[in-house]
Length: 262
Ligand code: ADP
Image (cartoon, rainbow, N blue to C red; front, top):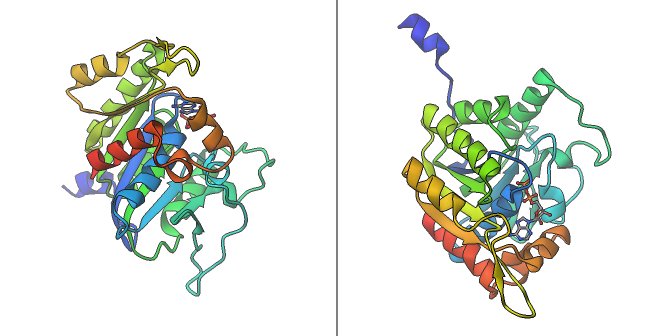
């Protein structure tokens, strides 16, 4: 048992944080960060008594600074912990705050791991009810390390209905199951595009691939987000749709997902 316990990961809660929800995807560009940002805003919007944070551990391609319209160096607290930056009521921390936007992220192995260690352990979150974590895409060392170092309430997996994205999402779900992180369900993103002029609906990446995968893996579909210009524009201008257009159908789709995950 000595040997067994040495091999076991040391899970330690993040101080002050009640629940950690990770947002993951098999592949890049499927809308994982957009979902993480809008989920964080939706959790706060659905229950104003809840304090919500957003942690971007997508160290190679942090998108939270841009999507949350934040930049700058976090201040240090008296105990030398980094203070998150705040916007739209969400406390945010990202690798993007710690390195220049144009600096090449050519770190490998240990450097990434030390960055992850900083982001997980050297942030003063205060008291949070939910911390939404934007994972890097795929099933690499970072995902494994995060899953093994902190207790995670559940993982939300984002995929488009395209086969290649679904295959990778499948691998992602399997990885979380292996490390005993409950998979809360799948978010199907960009499944349908409705022409704003003629209202015709087109399933650009396929109609219901994520639904099929959900059945195969016995998982819930947490929501279906359409491919919509407003979602893209809102993200790119740092005014996420749940914040800037909370009454829109697109925002409502994220607000519903938030009710499913807690
Ligand atoms: P990932 O985190 O998976 O790499 P992002 O969330 O960064 O993906 O999304 C990739 C791009 O697609 C971004 O420009 C984003 O604004 C856009 N996008 C994501 N979801 C949608 C959607 N439902 N409709 C329109 N654009 C979207």
